[in-house]
Image (tube, rainbow, N blue to C red):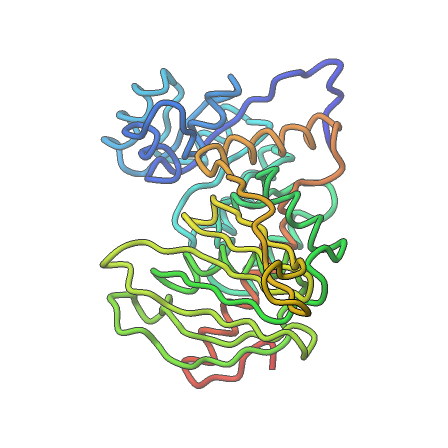
Length: 335
């Protein structure tokens, strides 16, 4: 149940997990960026307590954020602090027991790091324990950017026309990094219905998170080609969307968006060519801050649901696990 905000204006927020995405990146990054859960809630003046199993890491994060409620055991934090909102930034395998403990302590809003679970069964168990009384937002950070939200609205309105194909590039694992790309695809074009794996890239990724070349199908008509790059050379996250009326490209981690529209060719009569209509930028450095604000708006009753819901996180997980299972020669969930 969302609290009566006439009584409670600012929630108590606990961050569980003080590693890179929990706290560390903001301890060393540029000051105008907000790259972590702790940084987002600190900026919103709601950060109340931190938990981490590593005492040195916990102490460093506590000093940096000026937080004195520090716990090596998240269960002690939840029992003593009883936070209103819990940010879970731990390794993926710990998610279900953390969600269960947070709900038992009285928390009714959770910001959950992606991927949301190791298995689909665990993700569905998280959904079951949360029910309809608990709001869960998932940190697929591009979902919260207004520039990319505007692009989603344009795609849904048919501004690009019928989509002819989509090509993307990513690196460092289909589950960890590739799931960001999969989430964008399903946000904009609907659920992936079939997958085909072309190759496993020979990089240093473990078997539970291979980097894969793949073909995805949505509705049996739109081919989507996902191409792997070796992250050991550099990071790459791109997408090229080609429609009958225009084209959109995302580059620079998906932060630069260029939009072309088909217009009559000024040189050759009877032909149409693409002309650049917009060159926009998404600010991924504020992604987690926007995610926290988005969840806070739901907690306060100002918004119906998060911009990236638990169901969205489950959909992304379902597809990336299907890709991994197909690569391993197993029957996938989408078959």
